[in-house]
Image (cartoon, rainbow, N blue to C red; front, side, top):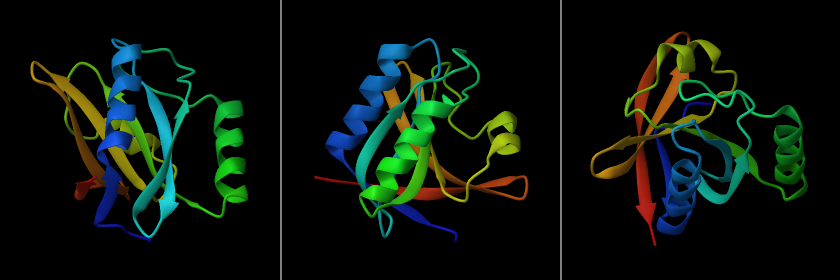
Length: 135
């Protein structure tokens, strides 16, 4: 499944940005669940790596999140994580370690704040996808 867009609300984006800011300079991460490219739930997951340049989702948190997604009849639409040092695209590590066919939303930080960009990662390459922000 290849998605060319992801629809999130301003509040969901704010929740992800707040999570990223609260953990900076370490990377933050989480999952986005919903239906038909429209996010219905942001699920925050602990970054087991506790690193400013890498994320590894805590396996227990991730399994709990997957169970919640399944029990609520939703799909995993995206994985999000932050790049507190400002890289706006998927890093070589992000591309090499991408394990799910979902959008990878990256929050990068610069002097104006946090910016969100989405990428579809497949076969060692990343292609930008549209992030549509709605009320």
